[in-house]
Amino acid sequence: MMPPTNVIVVIGAGSIGQAIARRVSAGKRVLLADLRPENAAAAAKVLSEAGFEVGTATVDVSSRASVHALVEQATALGEVTGVIHAAGVSPTQASPATILKVDLYGTALVLEEFGSVIARGGAGVVIASQSGHRLGALTAEQNKLLALTPTEELLALPMLQPDKITDSLHAYQISKRGNSLRVMAEAIRWGKRGARVNTISPGIIITPLAKDELNGPRGAGYKRMIELCPAGRAGTPDEVGNVGALLMGADGAFITGSDFLMDGGVTAAYWFGELAPK
Image 1 (spheres, rainbow, N blue to C red):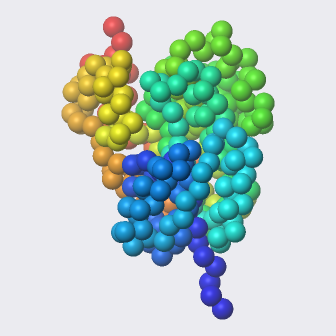
Image 2: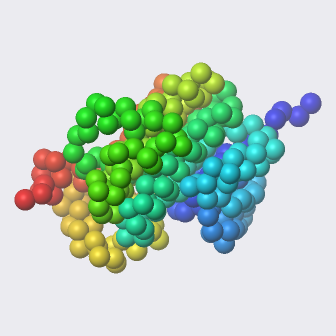
Image 3: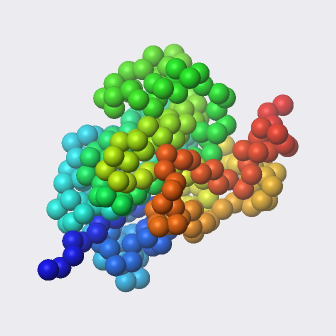
């Protein structure tokens, strides 16, 4: 009898999702899902030419029906042993409402839906952001609300209404803080299935999206971060891939509900160094 096919689902077919997938998907089936079919197809071509078995799907993470359809497509292929959630929109790309819907609600939805099917011994990684670490401290009550509010009630929280969140950067920061809090809470539920889930909070990683940001209205600020951070450079998708491989593999078996900040020290310089707000 053939062993069941192990399936790695990659949501968001960009450079970071692909880099992690390359490290953890040998001998497994990869399902690459993206909002834009052409992005999924381009990533699938690269991975299949590198020897991976790949299929594609279209998904809108801000739609429960769409995420549920992706879960069904994945489970029809085999056992879902890995979920890499790297889809999202940046402050330059979207309005506060869209950022909250895609980055905060969408992530909660993915964690909920895939947390109901993840296989024993499986693992998930959610890509958050250093931005979540530059938000001031929230209250214990706010942390609990972001972590535990039922997915469908999340966007109705008073703390997330337009009078409280007035700009895209704030929406992005609170979404990414929310992602790491949500993953802590979900780690308990995933653990009951014998699975693990963590977040990675990357700093400036050179991807097409980062290049948009570097050339956008906030570009000067990003360049300053790169120059003044302890590492003195931006990161690469492969470096995020290394951390993703640790968190999804046997070496990370004791790590769950955690957030890994990898930003070249930007956050350190923001709170205690040359990047501190004047």
